[in-house]
Length: 112
Length: 118
Image (cartoon, rainbow over all chains, first blue to last red):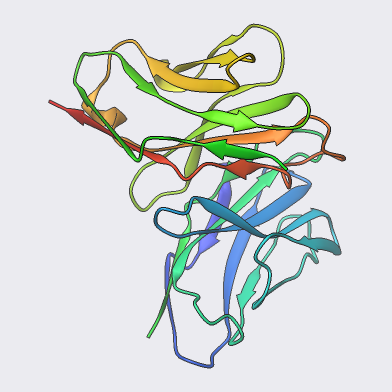
């Protein structure tokens, strides 16, 4: 099936630990995005990438890092510098020339 | 700067009645407008979009939305609500003048919980 796969669905992070969320797409989309969702705040853009080996900061990039070594993959690392990482994280993708973005099923990150 | 407002945190509708979820927007130029739906613990699903053309846009699951330029609104509607329509709905906007492609310039509203009562 074509789509966007995020893993793991649930992840627990200890204080001071870095964790990485995986996002893979087989839609042949050029652009990929990471959003953070908190209750009552809608979606906020963390990072996005329009092409391989290039990415841009979104509105809330501090404490996060990404890489785009392959067109299909856009992993997000939540570093220890992110002081309030507990949230629902959504990966998305689109064609560069298009405007509709499509979302994965999301990953829950909880600090323990 | 562009923005989206969804004035209602929650909308309650009886099954079989028509439903409306409100959205107003603010952009400098002409807008691209979108509606997405999110079920609990899931990602967002695309419902419909307005780019240009007919002001009434039809989308998935019987939903439609009407673009009103003078009122800067893009309300989501459905003639007859189903219990299964209960979910969180997001409106989003992008300024047509935003350079490049993709959706990095997409701004989301805070979402409206739609509750359909049997």
